[in-house]
Image (cartoon, rainbow, N blue to C red; front, side):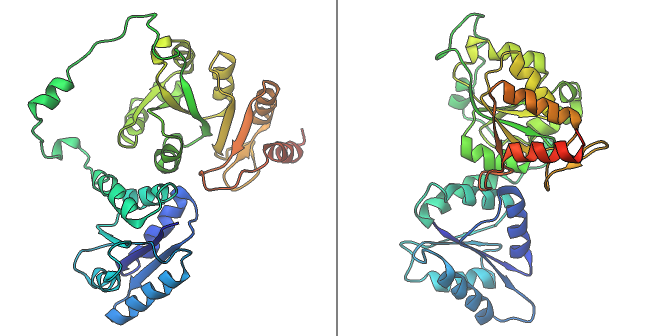
Length: 329
């Protein structure tokens, strides 16, 4: 695995490493090197050398640095001399860039491959709200022509095999957030993220925030449960690779009983509220949740209990029984 060194002025490298672990989980072959006001160039260089020596593969090292031309960059540049064929430096470190690096090194063998892959996500992560502040870009005529409206497919049209491919169906009270938009999306590669919720579908502000949180290249939609049931039966969506997000297990059960052909549910997080018991750090269940999961089990639904792909799977049966005991059911 490519080793990654985060290097910065001050504690920024440590802080963004902590942020990255919240989104993508704890990472191996990773080190934060921080230049403090009391330090000199040799001090941060020594941190970098120690980090490289600790990596499983010291022949493949990627430096993610805060600022081009600063001391951390200059020391990384000095270290890379003689290793340019395998090592790489990318500056302008931000969280989208870091998450992309974590995801890409799972399938890429060299630091050069990862460095090339993270440039676009790092740049795309710089956005502004309101969008009217974004400088206007002139679109080439060819691109404008290619984007001309094509119209809706007639009802009854069969695309592909006529069935949606569910690459992930997740229960998460936070719906679309960093862990989903980055870690899970990179892992399962959806073409569309669908938030299935009656409440959110009628909340214009939440809908807007969710659609804006979609990762680059993936469209996000918010639809009511009954609409999802209709869409699941529409053959025009046959080429869709969908990542479904449910706010509650009750919403997931209703969709599945209505005909949404999900075989497994990823249980990511369920917020605590009155009447629920915390069964681990991110899951709280109430009596109705236990009954709902029991019903899902009866329907043959499997469970994948993980916050992020790098986590180990937990035993859903044990979680349900723990909740049942603490709720005196």
